[in-house]
Image 1 (cartoon, rainbow, N blue to C red):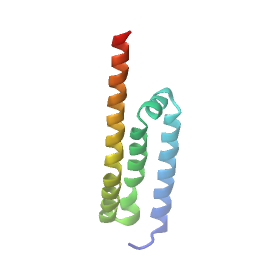
Image 2 (tube, rainbow, N blue to C red):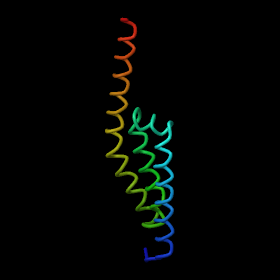
Image 3 (cartoon, helix red, strand yellow):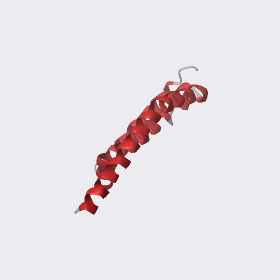
Image 4 (cartoon, rainbow, N blue to C red):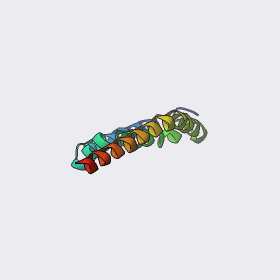
Length: 99
């Protein structure tokens, strides 16, 4: 893929802008709730935002390979987070029923 510096510049500027808006959202009450209760969701969304523009920079096929690598590395971590959240919720329910 050749260097189309205009496309690269516009793409990176859009990633920066969308990430800045996302960061601003994470400062809202809804964003704080996500950050504190479901951090993994915020990481997945942020990563997906960046990966979604990769086809413009490295081509569709290479972007799919990057997506596959992030999925292979991320699924076990997200699974761990969900299991821990379910365990914590079960403990909290159990403590509430004891009171």
